[in-house]
Length: 138
Image (cartoon, rainbow, N blue to C red):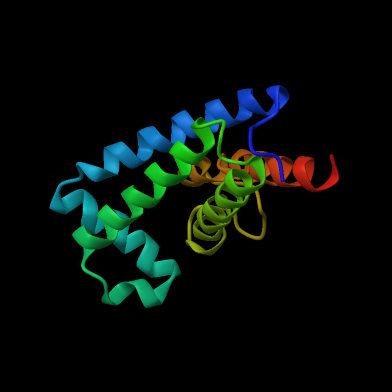
């Protein structure tokens, strides 16, 4: 496993890292109403989360996003590790997309107008998988 990202891996790492870090920093300052909304959407798809306090859940999610974003931004974090973290994060977002009613057009994987904001996260999955495969096969 390489201990530093290769030059061609830096653009996708920087773009996704900055995006996810910004999202995490925004959630870290979430008020109770925002936390309830974030938690509600997650708990609808992942019922085991329903027992958690919405504010505590949102703060934990924020910490996770900050960690994934930072891992991608720091080139000394191996791309295999950063890519695996990004892949897991993106897979959970796509789970929200696939399991939340109204985000997809009926009988299709295509997003509805309400689902475009989450469906676009498929690019995160692609970049994460790309980083992992680049390290495993390159």
